[in-house]
Image (cartoon, rainbow over all chains, first blue to last red; front, side, top):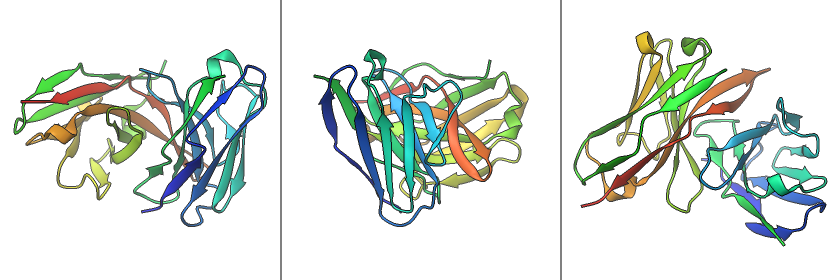
Length: 107
Length: 121
């Protein structure tokens, strides 16, 4: 299985901050990398596919980059509704695998 | 509106069987795979596998192969996840999610609200 490792596991930030989350794959996954957001007690919500393509309705303050083994999710100006846990997921090959999650908390 | 409606919370004893459901609406149910994702208490997301509603082709994660089974009833646009003998370690929230493919890129775009399964003696 392809292992996905996110860093950091958690972070504290303030509204308006720029936040970057890193996701590393144990082998090259080309650009087959998705990002999801999950709020407490809710189902995950898609954000980005193909490493950098924002899905419909996702605010433009979210962006993704990377290819191969190293990827990033950036929130350019953190908003109150962005406090959540973020997961990367590889769709290069099954079994699809997720990172362990990065919890973004209020500072 | 595209939706996946999941069945309600379950409380079971070890060794019991269980089937939970995921009903699609607002789209052609047989056009897109349905994935199942587990989230254990306080834990992250784990992909269990997927099923093609058009022909019931399944693709299980090795971590779950042999312990769960996936099926569909096309006539009622419903996918199922089933256990024949539950264990305490099956306690989790289970999500179904629709798979989308765009230019050979796969992602899960619509998620059900989740079904909580508690297994306790």
